[in-house]
Image 1 (cartoon, rainbow, N blue to C red):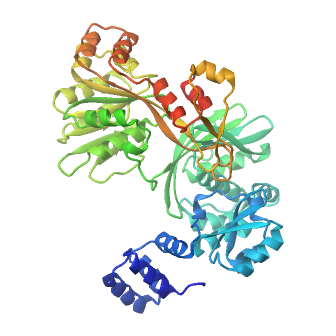
Image 2: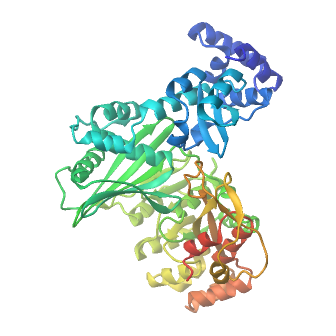
Image 3: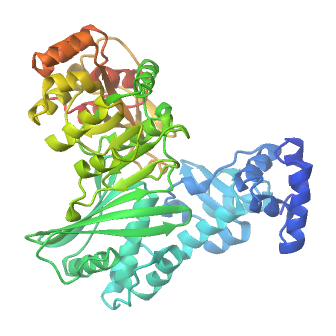
Length: 561
């Protein structure tokens, strides 16, 4: 190690990141466990491994890189041997022309840098600091620990499935991956999906093959294909993991897989559906350990954020979030109730399913098989002295009417609808059979939204969009447009993450008068625009101008012809 642990801790003390009292406590821990001082401080929760790494990097005058955040290209990793990676505790991260960026435990090791330069023939080696734990784990995974997709397929012809277990943890996944190729294949599909931040895995049987696709940032991407004869084995493995009836192939089934991968706690909802070519499988991945975003992080403009914050702090009324499936409605609802959550309020939710668990909030999940629907859950919770109620979705007249009654009796109700914009939510409620005067008396506001992909910051570059794209969007002013070129960080998609595009309709007295008169959604929207409504299109245009997303992405998401 190029710096003594004691010196690192001295730097942390100088930066006031640890106190003398904490060091004293760490010394007691050292006597019990034999840990080094910095490791003892980390174990006790006084600092993190990242605190140590960033402090060292700053002292050395080199950047720190958390390689756990990167999707590493095996071709780049392969420019040095496994022995060299282990000896120098170094991982090639990415290569741009003749410059190779390498994460190292000791980025000042001139001998190691020269050896890597000679081996790779790269004239410029950019050495950055990485944590030893992350580097060695990456070496294990990429050089020997993780099988390649094609290698697994080759092994399946000779391999046989081993006994399977219900309780799937990361250690058992690794062990099973070494025992049975078909198990290894399914594990690899799941592990890779988590690594690239996929929300869904599609395993789709075709006439001559089985296709695997991941939904990443809202877009399906083909990942690989497997031979047709493996289709039944893959389906059986997934069904066993999700506790389905493995012998039932004629009826649709739903199941669930719970899994822990390193620091991630995952719930996977599994759906099978028989098709003419075999069982189609979709696995929805829910990362329960992911950080829930706040309202300020999901894409609101400053003005809309202020208005929406005021709306959700009202003592009663109905607030609806609308949009198609996969538009981020549930995330917005969670961010909303997390914002107003406090010890003085009783907040309850009825969901399908519970995706995040929030302290202080009573959350329940519908179960239609036993008659526990949204309506029944809402009716039950009204007897539980709630202040605020979140209903996953208003699907029918019964649920809508109970939500209205809850609002009329002094409760704040949050829910969702499947409509294209904010104003049509009003007409949708009318179509369900809810009286217009009840809607006007209780509905406070409607937030319509979509999710757009965000340009990858690492490979962001200026460009000129096609003329037809600019024409369809109506751009006349001269502005700078940006897109992502594609890199390992964004898996060569040019995008990394998503943000919301919003349309916030807050009902005033004039709009409520129109509702009572049963006017169309278009008339309500026309009045709202006159009163300053920013439409989905206008919000999308602003995000283009700010370099957040691309014109093509706005056209795709808003489905503009």
